[in-house]
Image (tube, rainbow, N blue to C red; front, side, top):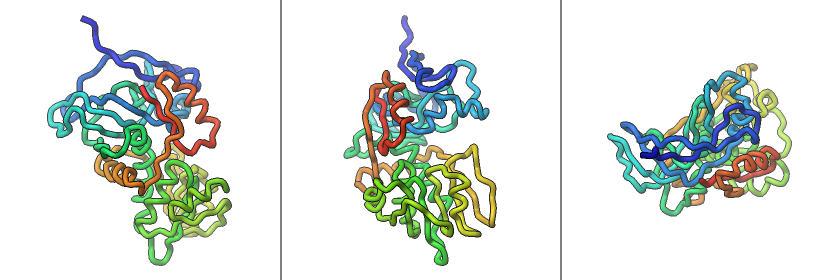
Amino acid sequence: MSTATFRTAVVRTPSGPDSIEIIDVPVVEPGPGEVRVRIAAAAVNPVDLGVARGLFHSMGLIDQPERTGLGWDFAGTVVATGTGVDLTVGTRVAGLVDSFDRDFGTYAEQLVVPAAGLAVVPDVLDLITASTVPLNGLAAVQIVDLLGDASTVGNRLLVTGAAGAVGGYVVSLAQDRGWQVTGLARAEDEEFVRGLGAEFTTHAHPGWDAVADAAALQEQGLALVRDGGAFVGVQPSAKPATERGITVDVVVARPDGARLGDLLARTAAGELPARVHAVVPLGQVADAHRAMAKGGVRGRYVLQP
């Protein structure tokens, strides 16, 4: 009897888009607390480009002897459940797979994941849009958690890369915590950023109470924070050194089913931005990586198995 298989995208010797392979791997049944999801959509994120070109291998964050899986977030339908799971077959879900060092990813036809990290997708939200929420949305939520509630004596927050996927969420979510938000972005993004309820600038001067550095400006972003302020970065492998009494944190996006459920509900209600640039077949993943690497794309490329 032949073994059931599914397609997934991997790199063996990472060297950019041309090194991405689509291979067949055996279907695995979910264990206790797990579900198997038929993936309908998987978003392409900048971190995926770094994995494919070997950036994180060279930093020692990935040590896979055979292959490395690609993709972090996804949306799809539950097709099998393990014991101790409340989700039923047929439920539409979205989720996030974390950690760099793994031989599987969301660029695939199927995926086995812990049910606790999943969120049910609202009926009015399509799965393609839902797939763009988990990684960027949860990163933004966790950035805002690190910033905390705005102080009554200093509530001026600058969000760099405010028109990007993470930055756009931070701009929206930080206002809920009392921050007076200004978005730093290119001139052509002014309407989008102001549409989120923020002030806008194309050039920021130092003196901000806090900076959420979604653009990964790093030390340049840190220099914009006043003495004793707060800085939250997005590159866990390159946390800037603390200086001038500034609190320096860095976000590491983690699965969180409850928080993701709230993000999906707010996206469905139109309260949070969700932008899909293009839907691309899984077999054209290398083309999607090449297109994204050129920059200037505000929405996500989404892969469809």
